[in-house]
Length: 418
Image (tube, rainbow, N blue to C red; front, side):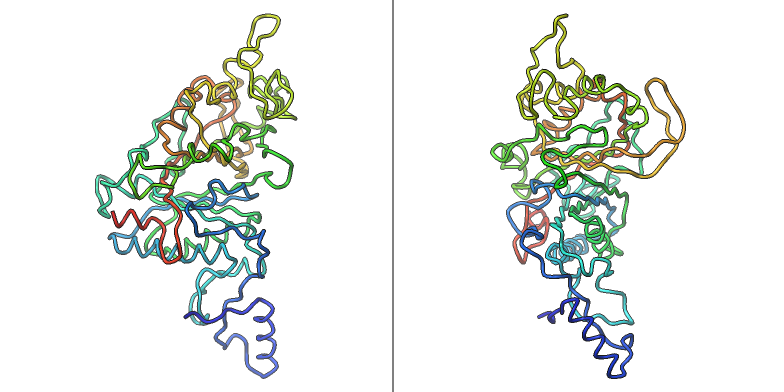
């Protein structure tokens, strides 16, 4: 049984008493300080039927990481997943990543930068990429036959300018919290625990107006993002995998992650009326053009005095609407990002080259099958969506996110029992 870990206050008090007794604190074996007892509203459950961070109400900050696997055998991979599961359960509860007594002459059991912080509704979501099942033609872990058909490689879409170092991965971790330091801390600990078994491939942090404003979050273009998401009543049919695939993925979901750079300087020079025509919605209210409130059903047949559609043919909302895509739908869970400034060349007039803010949208879509979800939707959008004048997809990944776990289980366990 692990020793009881004191509160931060108890830890500091113990250190003070030790100093008074003439014992140098650095010479003691110390316990890693825990974080403050969380209020119920500050803690999201880790265990359950589904993984957290998918249909969980969005938090304000994201830290996403994709990993290559360095483990060379099945047993080591299982050990990694077991260690990650145990640590994730502790981190989402506001505890240090690993239990036990800290020896000052050994590496830390937790890096400590989240000490004193609440869990801030931290969720940790794990995903398995195609490279886990087969890498360079090799079935490293004896699981190639269990790769779900839905975990199909994404095609190359029109306009893609994908950067190799920002794509793919055998494993991924999505950490979301209402405090960016808590989200980063979680991924940092899991990366530390994976030394020798997995290595970071690419990362992306992000932020959202979720919980800061009423209603749907806004992206960096100033428009609401996710208005057409499935409701609680329809999410089961859209998000969660059922018996149509391998048994180990039932109650799981498939994540498509796309890093989308937005030419904000170009966008900011556009008239508001043009921006609204591009989206097919009013910028302030989020209402579809011709409508009066955000969640009003768009009228795609409505025309103006000239006989033109009020919601243009190439508008984002028209092309993304389930009614125009045989009912195909996805759950958007996207975060804005700002990676500083970079040299870019816009691919649309005025073809400006130079230093621009490297910012945009880290788009994440969850669905029960990307082939009939994201891929079906985006194939058409990548060709004629008016937003393409301002957006460029530079990073990409697709991952199978297994179902949730119960105490004593590890993430993806059923895959290795199949």
